[in-house]
Length: 453
Image (tube, rainbow, N blue to C red; front, side, top):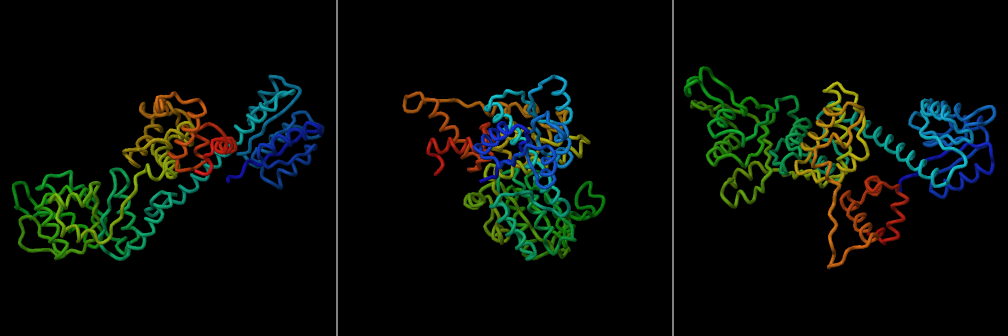
């Protein structure tokens, strides 16, 4: 279970200190208390506290001094000031210095619980964002696939293993999952990394144009061919050629490609002299290639030549853990490109992204973040910056079950269960989406008997 925030309580009144300490410990926080402001300064130097709750008026070292020290030592720390001398002026001063909130005595315990829980969530999000940015920094340089999903990590291990073998590879997966990025990854980790990498979408050209692009032509081969042109296969010799949507090739083009792979030579259009080539082929499709073979639209012998190693890339909807990491990667990318200081994605936006199915996969997520960066004038992407269909995503229709309108408890149980399924059982993310802390979620799971599930 995730560790709750570490809290320091500073109050020169012993009864108030003990009461607060008892309440915070019951909430599950790791709590340390002191009556001395001087001792509080010493404790903060020795240990990192996520939250500091301090009385404002104390002798020798007051709450404002503790606030300044806490922010100097650990800027991510949130400080909550409590005082019996509540004035607008002191409240404004405290907030300007970076206080999270300001609670006046006599206070209600529920009010303090709420403020501390919100402060703890803010600290958690800041730490999570810092962790994501640190992970993203590690992806700079050599071609890398950004993921923290276990299945994707295993797939990448396989890709690294087969990269130096020089065998042809067939990639499958939905549109937008990153098949070209995977092919670049394999090329980067292969013995051909210093050679050229070329990519072509076989479904974007007519047969004549595709033949010209792949095989090249001789001068005078047809009207307008005023000079000899190397094709991509010849240009990629010593490197890698990525054939996207390979199943869209016409049968006659498939025959020509098969001959290139078998004979390791290419014949330019209009030429009778074959040119020897040394190319690694990585092909990709978003179709069921076995169906294409059965229907006769794709040659089985070409399939065997390309399918030496087969890798299926999972859709983004099956790797929810990557949504936040990829979101911050694209945020960093487009903030830099657009010369904007956009550093955050609000929890509400992230909650929506975590529940979205992404039919367009990683490409769609990238477009959403790019749009958000373009539209925002502040430092964060907010709900208003999302496409309209995403802004309406959280609206759900409640229906009768077996002719009976569900009770509030039944509906809550069903909704919690649905959210947990959508986020793959990640209780931290589920609690964020539900707008409650992990302890409250745990209590509800126990109440409804969902903890075992």
